[in-house]
Structures are given as structure tokens and as C-alpha cells.
Image (cartoon, rainbow, N blue to C red):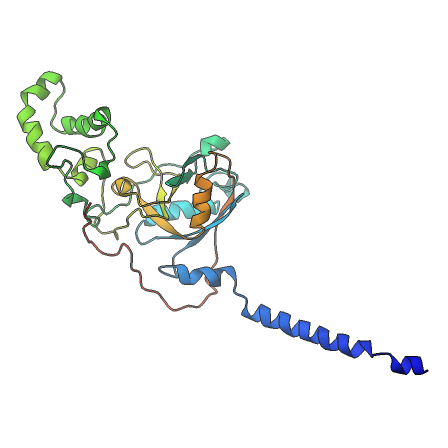
Length: 303
């Protein structure tokens, strides 16, 4: 009997400990934020769509800009949610693709359906405000006759293909003899041309009613093969890329996972698989509207 009375009562202490654990768990659960609650304050505008790019290396979250590129944003949402291509919800477009093109520390690209035996969707128009970006103020050539760095001209052959061929076509010059005969006129015109005019000669069409968006580090762009060829390809820029301003539609920006994107860019092409791209539901999170600060003005840019 004495032995029983002398034992320390175990049950009450365990009971108190269990109650404390329960209280701690409830307090932690009450303070924990859901993913949308963590990410929504990072958005320029909380009503903008939020995309999750889930990959074998981790997740990247991107805010889309439907005000700046309504057609292209709708295209990506339809592809990601399985609402456009014939396979429908059973096989959403980006599921199972890879980052098939990477340039370390510069950009990574996905959306090449042919690599997975899939059909590409039809092309849609570019949505770029070239005047809002000040491209009409940037001369094609400097005082020494060198192309503007934003043109990203590689060599003489590149200049001929990208500048002279469409320029000669606009002047109806069809032979070397005609070019020699009009050399003075050609030189004078090239000396007064700006970047916007050069790209317009190549076929790009711009929309001054859209907010101007620059391809900064962390931007999400539509990949293309020329004017009006946006379909499904996506580019994540890891540095500012002003040479893409006149030719690539900016549809969003990375709000979380940019360091991961940098890491992916340094891995072999095609080695990182995309599990899925999905929209994140932020409709249940109630936060005050934030002011949009980037890309809403028509300010010019100096090189």
C-alpha cells in the first residue's frame, strides 16, 4: 500500500502535457497562412491570376497581367487548365513537358509541344506597346553607324537579314544594281530610322492602348518565331532583356521562385520536368487592393 501511495501520479501530468500540446497545435494552426495568403501580398494587383509552375526541382509562382496582354494571358490560362486543346482536362498542355531551352543565368523556356508529340495551338497576335516603352525614341544607328544594342545584332549577315532585307522590300528594291543606284537615299533613311520602325518593317504590330511592360528580370514572356507567332511557348527571364522589348509580349512576372529558376537555367536542357502549370485560387483571400507601379505609364527609356 505504501509503495502505491509513494508513486508519483503519472496520469495528471500526462494529461496536462497533452492539453498543452493540443493548445500549441491549435495556436499554430490558427497562425499558419495558406499558400494564397502568403503569395497574395506579393502581387501588383490581387485580382490578377496567379500561376503555379510545378517542376521536378520545385515550384515557381507567376502573376499574370491580363490588362497588358489579355489575349495571350487567356491563351496560357486555357492551355494550363485544359480548355483549349483536343485532349481537354485529361491531358493539360504543359503537363509533362520540360524546360527544353536554357541559357545559364539569362532565361529558361518551355512549351515546345512537338518534343512530347503534341499539337501546337494556333498562333495569336503580339500585345506590345512600343511607344509606351519609348522605342520610337531609340535610333537604329549611333553616330558611328553601329546598331543599337537593343537590336542585339550579331554580325553583318544578321544586320542584312533583319534590317536590310525588310527595308529594301519596303523601298521595292529587288536587285544589287537598284541598291547601288539608291545608295544615298538608303543611307539617309537608315540614319533616321528608330527601333520601332525597324520592327514594324519586319511585320510587328503594336498597340498603344495597352500598358507598357518591360522584359525585366523575372518576367514571363511569350516565346515566338517572328511577328504574330505566339502560341504556347513561355520564357522566364533571369536578367533584364531590353533587346526583347519590341518582339516579345510580357504576360507576367515571377513573384516566388526566381532563385529556383536561376538554378534550373544552369542544368542541362530538358533535364527538369514540368509536372503541371495550374492557377492558384486566391478568391477566398481578402486583402486591400494594391497600387500597380510597374508598366502603367508611357515613360521613355534611355539606353
